[in-house]
Image 1 (cartoon, rainbow, N blue to C red):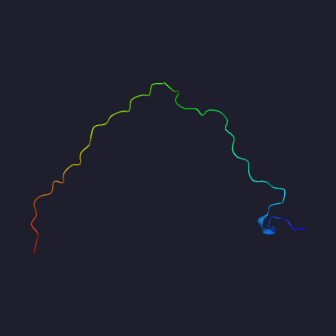
Image 2 (spheres, rainbow, N blue to C red):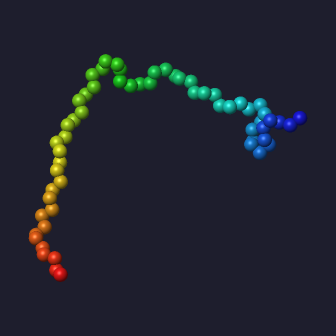
Image 3 (tube, rainbow, N blue to C red):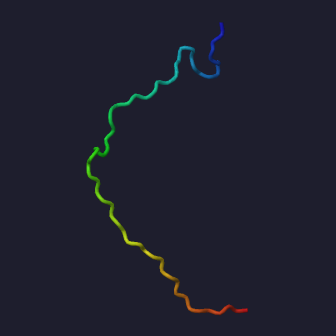
Length: 59
């Protein structure tokens, strides 16, 4: 009688697929109703304009 598994797969006929992961309770996080701290607001930083002297193109 032949096995249902291929010989090159390395598995024995008695092996089974992996079990699905189990939940282990609630993860640590923000408690519902807890006040969150306001984010720090930063002012806008504008780019500086290039200060180059007026040069004429040499033709």
